[in-house]
Image (cartoon, rainbow, N blue to C red):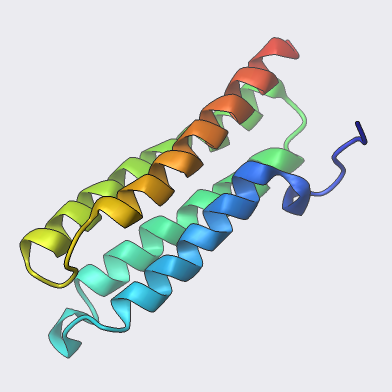
Amino acid sequence: MSRIVRFEQLLAWQEAHQLVLTVYQMTKQFPADEKFALISQMRRAAVSIPANIAEGFRRYGIQEKIRFYNISEGSLEELKYYFILAADLGYISSKNEFMAQADTVGRLLHGLISGTQRRK
């Protein structure tokens, strides 16, 4: 197994980045009056997930790394709520596909945190 030297090599980051791309595509279909409301909030939360993984990756202290990965988890949960809201508002036909993708990111993020904690 080769050593991971860049955050882009982390599977959790890769999947989180794909989730961001999904959110950007999805929100293109939302009503224009949501541009500065739900669209902005969803995109901000989505981008925060891989961004905090990247920032945490570069931190040297284990606790500091975990703190940024935990922030990613919080942003992921926030995004899951926005999927529920978007479905309830009728902006997406079903939240299931998006929730499944978010759950995958969550599992990978949990694994990243667990692996980092074992390095203590």
